[in-house]
Length: 270
Ligand SMILES: [Zn+2]
Image (tube, rainbow, N blue to C red; front, side, top):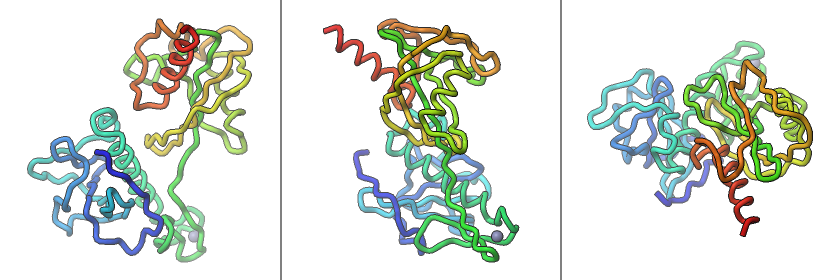
């Protein structure tokens, strides 16, 4: 799929949708390998919430929430994580956007301040309390993900919470009141005990598990020996750019940081 996606600015009233994403219980309904249905594949009465996401190749694209997973001939239910690398990057991005919009809608039907019912704003993706006017937007949690580098080596870690044993870059949530650079330095020190110097921004990626925005950096090692924090990190070590272990796929920002570093080192050799 090479179509351009233009996110919606105004979100109500719902336009006539021509591409449909269907979600129930956090799972996505796919036909064959496809996420986008050319028409709503279920009875309209089974839909409990619908949102306009934006225009894909000029076609209004939306997501529908069902209160339960229905059997739909020729279709199957899939988890979002399982779609990574299985559908196009654009479809994965749309699926992540759809899941986050539905979760935000379901999680904020009532005001967190006064308990009153909330209603949609017309022009923005927001819910507003009908009693106290408190406004809730979809919540995005910024995180830093950083590859610490030392000459031709990079620091990779295995996390205790991940079943697959991939070595990956370090990552963590940005605390309230912290800059991305401060969070990066703190997380690296907490997780593996080393200090970093300059950090170089590489790029960002939305990561819808459940609603992170990953900010990716290459960070220069400054001081300290690797000493993994045992509860989070099962193993951490330096790896030369041309002798890397199994690393995350290129669809992930971690995979991109490691490949960027390896390419930089390789280009210096020639
Ligand atoms: Zn309220």
